[in-house]
Amino acid sequence: MPLSNAIYPGSFDPITYGHIDIVRRAIRLFDGLVIAVVANPRKKPLFSVTERVRIAENALAECDICGVKVIGYDGLLIDCAKSHNVHAIVRGLRANSDFDYEFQMALTNRDLDSDIETVFFMTAGCYSFLSSSIVKEVKRFGGEIKSFVPESVEQALAQKFE
Ligand code: ADP
Image 1 (cartoon, rainbow, N blue to C red):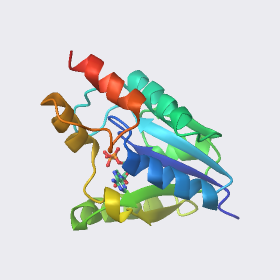
Image 2: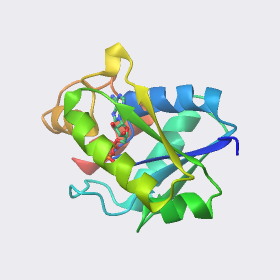
Image 3: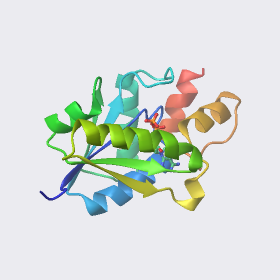
Image 4: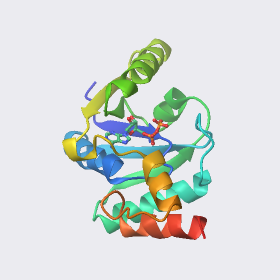
């Protein structure tokens, strides 16, 4: 079965140019892409799932990326993937530190459903250090984050930290 539709899951708390770079590259390979924002990630999120979905939608629009659906989900990723008729999971790899967790998740998801393949995109060199946590930390202390996130994301962070 061709891997025509993919799902890109994550916390997206908030979405950054690192995520957006992966989205741009994934939509060249797949016919359809769904960004799935996990409602209850491992770390307590700054933004609610509804806020993270809206922030990601606005950021994609600001970057002129069309046709990517953003949804919130809770529960097993594999169930969410099946319900959206998706056969590939997109994830990004930055440094070694990402690898162990990604490896574990990919093998677990394959065990749960061997029809769904995890596909990894290597980070762009310029975003290899970039994470949502870094962006939040810099903004919280009044630093400049223009090169890390679109303006609409910066505004959402400014409002949150007001
Ligand atoms: P999670 O909490 O599930 O890791 P994140 O929102 O932090 O969610 O990341 C979602 C996915 O995007 C992960 O696969 C992560 O490695 C990838 N990612 C995040 N930032 C970058 C970046 N700067 N470059 C490449 N991939 C990234």
